[in-house]
Length: 112
Image (cartoon, rainbow, N blue to C red; front, side):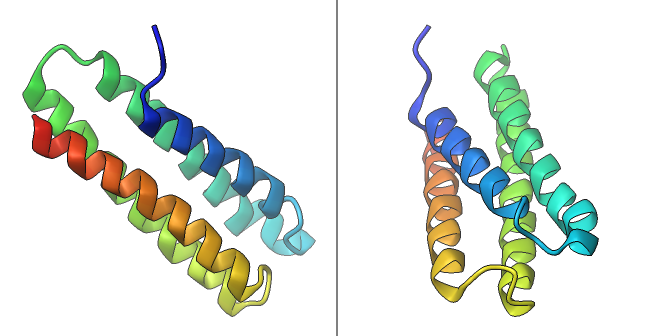
């Protein structure tokens, strides 16, 4: 079974996030960095659950959960940028990646 574009985009976001949270200052790597990493893994899990969910109502609820995770990621990446753990350019890049996944989730939800 081929992966849908939302899954591919979420994997790319997760890989990018893992690469950058590893560079956070030591004290924040195990708090904020770990939270970002866990949210990325939760995002992949929820996308997978939604893909294999049998009922469209359950799928809509899972897509709403995906959107919540994306919003939490936006907030944490903005915090990382405000603390200078990432550059403004990196923050723009990660927010574009998050927005792409969000648009795909929105289109998926509207399709249902």
